[in-house]
Image (cartoon, rainbow, N blue to C red; front, side, top):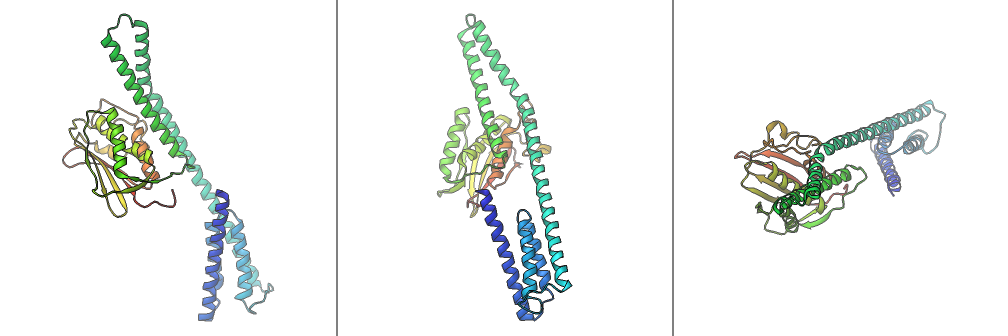
Length: 353
């Protein structure tokens, strides 16, 4: 399907450029009564076609067509093919040379871009493996140790001790589940063949789902809401955007040391929706603000709290999801303390999802 669409697109581009070129050349010939610039116009058309289409075929066809068109309609005697003049042969050779050089250069650039993208994906996978091997070791060790103690010493342990171990196992298992969900999102969106399927989602329903999921893990943490009064529909992949908001809220709870107030605010303009997660905690170390969304693997906790380190996968997921939606994400320190994580989503769906 993609190949057929590419062929159709290249055919339309070739026909459109040649049609415009012919129309402009005829206008110059009829209005200004000169044909000196017409070969240059066709050379430009050949260059553009070679640059914008795949392979060599469309460029070579446009070069041959241009030579025939110039010879037939814009060279005396008019409306007659005559290849006896050296100028015609030289023009044909020039157009073919332009075509071949442009197509070869375009193909080389595309191969370099593909190689660079593959290199970046491999670097991402390597960083991901390093982060996973480091960060999964602690909860797995805790789960193994606690379960082994329950099996080997269940007779001598008190009920309170058993219950504490079980709660610890469940907490570590929940952490691992969230980590796996984040990893799946990273690998899914890191694949260039993935397409987002956006659906217009009612803003209030999205926020309700986010808060229900968030309060399952942090039932005692209140979140202050500020939403538009009118009903708003935002095109998105709801599961991914829900995960972004949950990650940002959980990051605030885990890292914003001294936080007493957590807010989720959404404002809407004519073309965009702005989501903001605001806390009044310790803020973000200034040198780390610019690097928060750069890959994010294997970095320390982004806040001033040094007691808890993470792989930063949650923030990487947030940045990847928002960029895949065509939006922007950023983090800033508040003037009165704390930090604000914000991202934007377009209210009108785009064609290049």
